[in-house]
Image 1 (cartoon, rainbow over the protein chains, first blue to last red):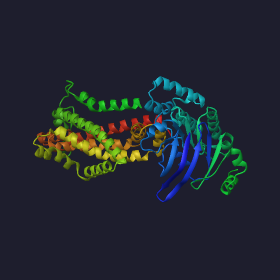
Image 2: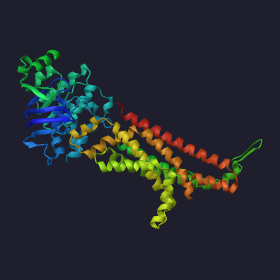
Image 3: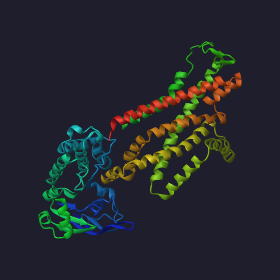
Image 4: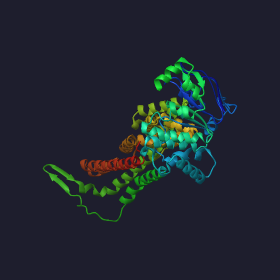
Amino acid sequence: MIEVRNLKKNYGDLEVLKGINLTIETGQIVAIIGPSGSGKSTLLRCMNLLEFPSAGEILIDDQDILNKTVNIQQVRENIGMVFQHFNLFPHKTVMENMMYAPLKTKKIEKSEINEKCLQLLKKVGLEEKADVYPGKLSGGQKQRAAIARALAMEPNTLLFDEPTSALDPEMVKEVLVVIKDLVKTGITMALVTHEMSFAREIADKVCFVDAGNIAEEASPADFFTHPKSERAKLFLEKML
Amino acid sequence: MLKHKKIILIICFLFIFTPVAAFADTGVVIPHDFMPNFVIGDINLQFGRILPYKKVFLNGLSNTLKITAISLIGGTVLGVLLSIAKVSNIRILKLFAQFYTSIFRGTPLMVQLFLVYFATPQLTGYDIPPFIAAVVSFSLNSGAYISEILRGGIESIDSGQVEASLALGVGRRDTMFDIVIPQALRSVLPALVNEAIALLKDSSLVSTIGMLDMMRASQTAMNATYLAFEPFLVVAVMYYILVMFLNFVAKELERRLKKSDRS
């Protein structure tokens, strides 16, 4: 369970997050949506401390990860992240990309990791691309490989930062299918996305972020049919 | 990656030892008129007369290659450390690396060489062999240049690469050495070869501290034969061939690296 309490982040005078409160239950799928520049990505990146918040608390399973005594590396091992621009390592093959972090951080036999990674590749439909360098993959394949890489660490939570925004339209679906399959495994998920129909389909909860605040928090059915806030109404009109 | 490490090691090995082995006295006697004399009007080029100094030239070649290769390795190790200091968040390290670079780029290499070879013994009371002095000063100097090249390379790597690695739970140091530096090295390879070429040519400065390198060999031949054009032309051609060889190695490496990543 992730609890974000009164989270604030500023860059100099610019206040990006103005006191966010958000709870993500274990196994819950939370879609974070909102206009660009509203702070969605920053909020997500605070949850694995790629950005360090200026104030507030982030409790993961009742442990405040902003506490100086907490081992950030260990926290990150349990929280996978998938990026908009994939960020695969171009000098490593797909398999090497996946095996790198487990080999570095876990005390498991290499052959065991290898087998696990092969299974994951099969799951995302890339088993024949194991020894290919990322430069030779299409956008959709890259993102599926990146998801498999995150899963190779066996995290209990996955953060998706606009996973389909950098893809050509015809490749969006193959990635969404993979994410949908993950939902069934019971993994906890926070998903920043502009794919409204997808968010509506898979999310248990929708958070509408506007100008550094959570303007609305509701079930997808309520949010997409009867948005309460004016901003959300305007936003949805533009999107749909 | 392992494959590349091997290739680089083999190249270093070849660079140091092959020429030495290949040029060592093989017992083949080359007749003195093998290199004919050229006579065009008043110009009389007597290459045959410097042929007896073949061994001197080959010893010089061997020393030049040794100094260049060892200094290059020393300079690269130093350069990597300094470049990491330059991109680190530790202020004192950063300042030190910047200061170091400004000193070694801001003074002539020959002055540095003389400071190490002539001035240090005055302070410590111990003589430094010319070879050690040369390797130390060239390593210190090229380390400064290489660190600047690498800093540029490291800063050119997309921050998403670091974020991806950190997000996977990998530490900062492993991320630097496994993810950032290998990619940075690729992008700065041409610049590093330029540095190697510059170092090879600058190694001719060791002739000023009495070490027998290629340059010194041609001076020796000149002093004994009173011929200037012939020995210096020979040594110029030798430097040129070495530089062309380095160019070839760099092109080959680049080609191989390109094969593996096209993104």
